[in-house]
Image (tube, rainbow, N blue to C red; front, side):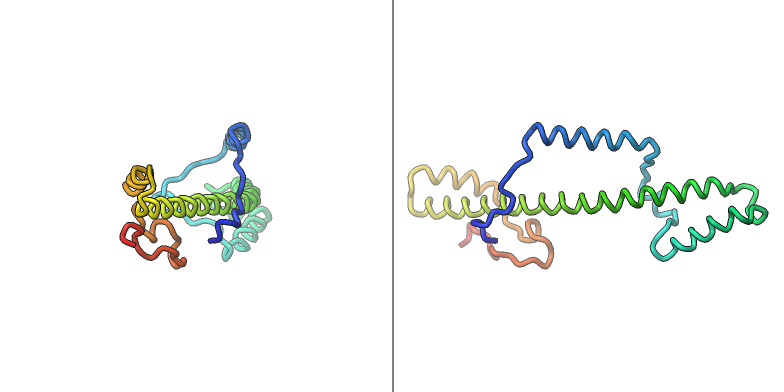
Amino acid sequence: MNYQNNRVHTTLGKEKLEAILAQIRALEESFPQLTPLTSKERAHMQTISGSNKLFVEDATELMAGKPELLPKFLEAKDVQLDYQLFQELDQICQAMEILFSKISDTRFLAGAEAFNGALMFYQSVKFATRAAVPGAKPVYEQLKGRFKFQASNSKPSGAETEFTENPDLA
């Protein structure tokens, strides 16, 4: 990463962050029908996917026209309402996934830039310590105690690693 090309040179600031978080809370409160599921509940449910969406659409339309074929315990209106809610929430999910992806990518980039800046500082302090620059050793010792370089924790799998060894051993 070329640190001279810092792409996220900004912050949100406290007021904007608080405003965004308040908007998120308000958005969540505007959905009283949101129903959290456990992973166990999800595992025991079948749901609409790309491959069966047309099946659900056709069945929903057909059951309205053929009520005599419905089991007595099934209300066509309930199925239609569920399907309509699914479609509405699907549109919201798509928009939110795009926004979440942008937020996540920007967070990742900011983290990468901050981490790389910290690594550059650490390397500079390490060299300053080796050169006996006054005041460098305590800074180096503090950072060294926190720095545990593990490429698997700081890079996505398959990504290139600029530092292939522990900087303390270099």
